[in-house]
Every structure is written in C-alpha cells, then in structure tokens.
Image (cartoon, rainbow, N blue to C red; front, side, top):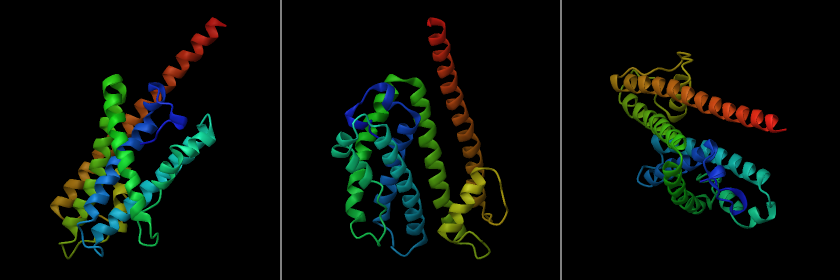
Length: 229
C-alpha cells in the first residue's frame, strides 16, 4: 500500500483515491505472482503476468516518487517506508537476479493494504465505494485477459494467441475505441469482451464522479474561506 510519508496515518491522507488504488493493486499483483509460481515458465500466461507486473511496478515507482515529493521529512521517509516502496517497484523478471526476493516486499504492502481497506471501509462510505469499484474493475480486467487468452488459444482461427496482443486488445476494448485489428472469435472470448466494455464504461463513470466530488468539496472549502475573510 502507499503509506503516508513519515509515518503520518491520518484518515485525511490514507483515504485518498490514489492511495486506495495502490492498496488494491498491491493485492492483485501479489495474487498474480503467487499464481505464477505454479505455471510453466515459458507459457503465454506467465508472459502476460510479467507484462502486468511490469506495468504495476511502474505505478509503484510513481507512488514512490509521489511519496518522496510530498514527504514532510524526506530523510525520515527514506529511512522508513522509502526503501520498501522503492523495492516493491522492482519487476520480477529473470534479468534482475534479486527480483523475486524483492517480491517479498509486496507481501508486506499487501498486508498493510488489507488494514487500509478495512479502515477506509469502516470510516468512510465514499472510500468504500471507490475501493469496491477499483477492486471489481481490476479483477474484471485481469481476469478477462487471462480468460480470453485461454479461450482463444484453443481455436485455430483465432488471432489473439499471445500475451502482448491480448493486453493491447484489452486496453482498446475497455476504452471502447475498438480498432478491429484484434478480436475474439470464440463465445467465451466475446463474452469477456462484453464484460470489459461494461467495466471500462463503469470505471470511467466512477472516476468522473470521484473527481467531480473532489472538485465540489474544494470549491465549497474555497467559498467558506473567502466568506470568512
């Protein structure tokens, strides 16, 4: 999870949408890496997991930079949560010899993420809605990619047979752009495509609502401050 720098754990900071996104994402990537240990290393499923892990590690690195920038005491952050946040952004690829060792850091982040999710759910209904939306969205996106790869790989006429193409297709489908360069031909694959489209529309609508609510609260606070002055 994205911890508030310098050990500050006030509700005003821990319930920010980006922190909740990091918390849920840490749990998702932990589940993927645990599943990876039981798969054939050369399979396309493992390749897809590695692609997800690489992208998520990029998000974790952005989270590390963000925490460092907003930390009241940057030295204290680098001596406490900084190394954990940075280590969690190292991808689990064979090129990095100690990558798998650093994956243990994600276990710590995931355990802390559970605490943050429970705390947010009990103390803030809006945060609970955001958590539920993010969790469902990530599960649908990740699950649909693996399901489509499974269904399409068994059809000789399919064009979605490798991890990179499935990931590209999922992004295009979720955004409802639909280039048409890749498409599912099986019943299961098309069903997952429908889920992805609904998930993409729902996520964009939820994020628009969250940001509009944040802007509304900021506007009210500015108006109250102006009236007091």
